[in-house]
Amino acid sequence: MKTIGLIGGMSWESTVTYYQIMNETIKQELGGLHSAKILLYSVDFSEIERCQAEGDWEKSGDILSVAAEALEKAGADFLIIGTNTMHKVVPQIQKRINIPIVHIAEVTAEELKQNHITTVALLGTKYTMTQEFYKEKLENAGITVLIPEAQDIEAVNSIIYNELCLGSVLETSKETYLHIIERLKHRGAQGVILGCTEIGLLIQQKDVDLPVFDTTKIHAVKAARLSLE
Image (cartoon, rainbow, N blue to C red; front, side):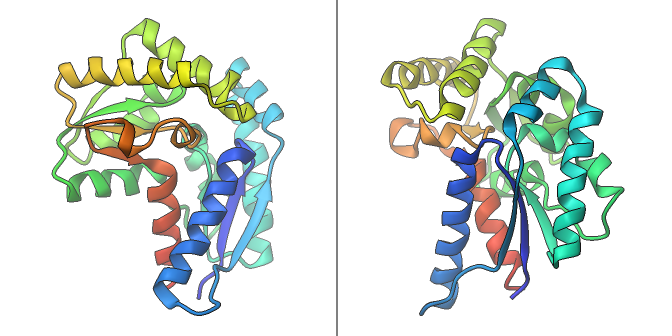
């Protein structure tokens, strides 16, 4: 079994989910007492969030590069970054290490194509929804990406940072998300990407009549299966 290097802590709430899913996947695949071989480097999210807010992506990339280098030195065979937004700095990180990074948007695109989704709604932080680093991975796979209107972008983003990243899961916020998803459905979305690793704490498939693609689950399962190849 290969060793998975996980850069987590963004937020730690979703890192718990990554750890659980990767171990559950290995158990399902191998049975018995098997569990995943994981090295975890958990960063201080407050520091990362400050860089995001100030637009200092280079500094945040440096912080995650240090984590990546430490995981490679410790014996990780490949890396996953337990956050969608910080995939913006993957090119910067990859230059400083020799092991591959499994990109969350690329594995999500694979999942969408397997399910014959050609137009998808994307929910995430305002950075993920409005900047090109994430959407271009989906568009390069031939998938049309729909994002919410400006007011809804702010609502989605606020709930992520002010509630979900702090472990607060509110029914009123779930209703807000469901209304936004419904509006995107009317614009032609065939499915919805939970493009922030915390959104799965709030929205599940049972809540929505469109196919839901939880990037945390997709990414974690892919990493576990890659470790067995």
